[in-house]
Image 1 (spheres, rainbow, N blue to C red):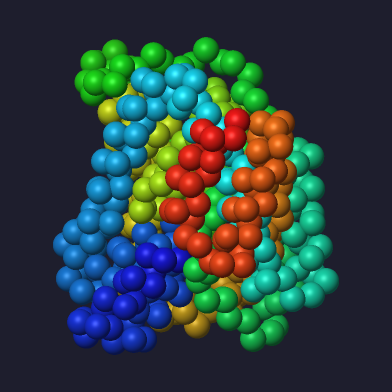
Image 2 (cartoon, rainbow, N blue to C red; image 1 turned 60 degrees about the horizontal axis):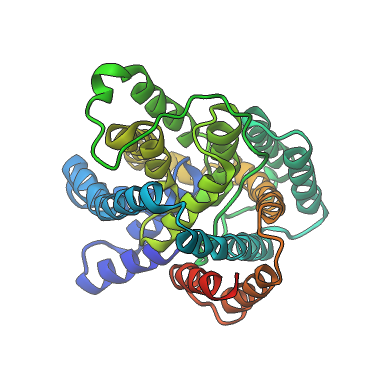
Length: 368
């Protein structure tokens, strides 16, 4: 991930930590749940200055992106139905498909090494497309981890190096309107603290529970978020969910900051803050505890073997994500052009995702 590379370069340049300490933080972030790059930031902060360092580094990595996403969320829900803006976001969808495919390609090259990994990947994709749902997604992660433990615990396995591509996206069926959406003004919805405190709390608990089921990459988490917030809760529509992912990709932070976009739609400013804290706080706490007990976890062959089962399942889930998001793309020749161009730019020329999304939006304005 780009953020991890930046952290490594800065720490080595300023001689703040030993190389092994940085690698330990990356290893730990890869075996604990939560957004990997953010966990590395928290782990490095803890290594440098204890709890205070973890808090300061975590906030420094998250707050600027949160402010940007909130500003874009306000603009989106106020002007998102303007035809010009609508065409802009139409260009985002095929670009998001390309990003997901490139993520699956990059991860698959590193993790799929034989028939067992292929089978795990295919089964994960089939279950997600055929059954779907939050429990199916969690079941895939647990079952693939257990399968990895059974198949690979006798061999010397090591987690692959963190991927430098940062793709995203998933979604599934259209929501069955549950009538649970609130009309939110662009102003901070402080009145919700009195009228709907239970909704703000529900956002926190929902995202907190989800956050501790994510392993390795924020992109595998997209199916879980989509199923809960679109299909189960009806908090956002399928289109809004994809647009929220695109907004998160425009900003320099982790893709899971999409939680702020969803929280804002549901319960205004308080909802955005509650969802964001729920998404990032529990994994950060686990990262701090894990750093304290790092040595025993680092030497665990069982943990490494389980991850060897989870990673090919993630590839299958990303393939399912690409299929589902592809079904929402505008049926227009421009979608194929944007998708193909974005794929070539990412895979062949390694163009950063942060550049792909805005360019795709401009293309949407011109071509649709």
